[in-house]
Picture 1: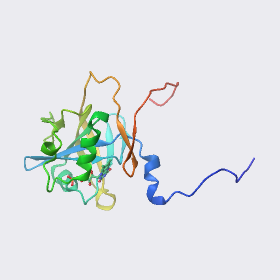
Picture 2: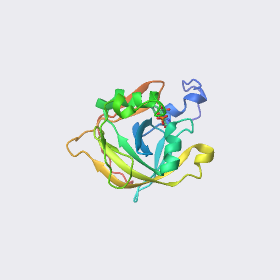
Picture 3: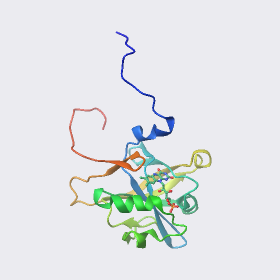
Picture 4: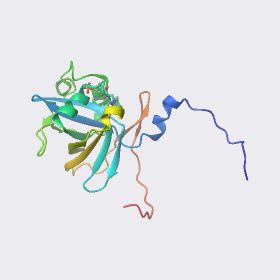
Length: 183
Ligand SMILES: Cc1cc2nc3c(=O)[nH]c(=O)nc-3n(C[C@H](O)[C@H](O)[C@H](O)COP(=O)(O)O)c2cc1C
């Protein structure tokens, strides 16, 4: 049966991203000239399983864009609800003018494979090497390979935060299980 009676209204195209942003808001750290910085980031997606490859959009208006291009390394920290205010703070300020580790009381911990630091307060930290920046020229899209992944074993049900746009966030909730062929 074909019906045109589905209740609907047009969504402004500028708000489509809020429907699709799937993953958690993350904190991306970079280090240039010995100075660490951190930004909030939510436009990212998995590209491959193992080694894990991740695509990230980082606007060229951000200080982190140049830092990632220059250093070719970063850490993706995954914060949970407890760190929500600091995470958004890192998205509302720039490393050009602010030492965000000091301002938001984030603890930088040396990583094992990259110069950029881990964030002690994050539930997980992924040390990454930038392996392809060809699409950064046109789309600000960086391809990152995870070299080392760290997780906090004591945090059993991490409540990650997910950006819905315009200051709204969804908090990860209950887990449900179905037989699935997706690994
Ligand atoms: C929830 C949230 C998600 C964000 N996601 C992105 C993103 O995916 N890509 C991006 O370029 N900027 C994103 N931003 C904006 C940057 O975090 C922001 O411009 C920041 O000031 C950049 O810091 P920097 O200049 O120190 O690099 C996001 C901000 C917030 C609050």
